[in-house]
Image (cartoon, rainbow, N blue to C red; front, side, top):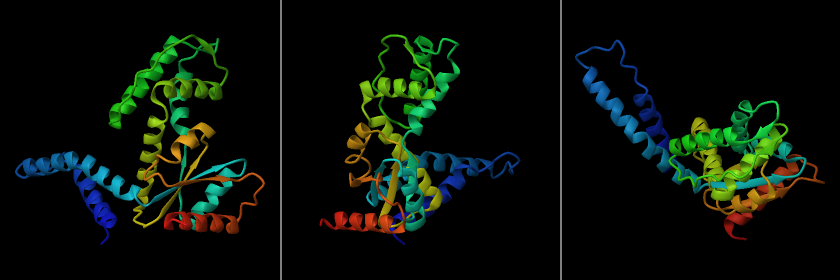
Length: 240
């Protein structure tokens, strides 16, 4: 078995062991089962990191831009077995919680800032990533989710750049890969809905730093275009 297959098998077994239900188990054997479960829970983060590191060496990132980007993502899944992640979800999730705290004046103020800060601290702790604290400036009128997303992105990236977004995207990709038990030598990953600034930063930093920005405007996004893009990927991987 390949390293990835071995890691996937061990991860599945360890995850199942970590989820062992002890309620109602035989009291005579429960201490042993409990010890095995606790050991499995401690081992999981190390195994997940090992899989992520090994899997990441096989990833090639595609960042489609333009009005046909979603169609590109759909066909990339059908034709090339790509993994697709929405790059805007990170800030949308944060902004959605802030939206719930806003009143009729639609103002992003101290309450929304504190809400964002607490959410972000929690997420960073859960994902074992360092966070540079945010700085509040002035109340801002934010009409609708899209304007809140813009404000949240501005606050987060002012002190953290795209580091947290990168961690989120990689985590989402790995989660999908584990669910699908991906062990391919080359794994195309399509990241949708990112800004030009984010694309410039992400293209050389996600996983092993191999990627391609794909312009989809004025293109007929069909099987031929997807195959042509994947051939371009193969050339880049070969160093041509």
